[in-house]
Length: 229
Image (tube, rainbow, N blue to C red):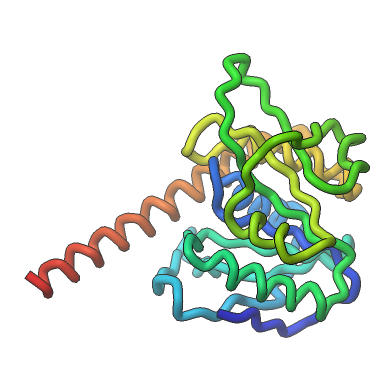
């Protein structure tokens, strides 16, 4: 597994959002790609993960890619793939990329489970105390898994933002709240009026892609079983 770049921005902030609880990282990075007019600068090459491609509105969707926003000098890592079992390998490749770019920091975006009966969406952070000025709350006790968990063990310049998601399904409200925090922290100048509506649209898009991916995997498993039995 490796990251192939056709452009190496200098001193960017890297935002990584891999599928996690509520698909918060994926929805957040998807929104940023479209809102900030990001350009594709690289891709992940791998044989470890399943050979899944997705087509949305007649266009091929790169399932795991690297994007750059020149106006903000932000690099965004976006994926719709389940990377379970390969978190350490991914973290190592992201760190190599960050070192090549001499990145200012990595911002990890994650969803965490909540059973808050009020329905209020809360955002938490680990790392830079400047994030507290955005309304995010400091994490006191938690277990962090996934790519962000691996990065936290191996990379010092990482901050994490966690959105409290209310279900295993895509949670656009938690993603929207994270985008609000990112806007304040990075000065993205997001238009908040259509924010949630657009996030819900991304949620519908992701549901379709993920459902199709799951269906493809199940059909492949059935075929494998028929070959064996």
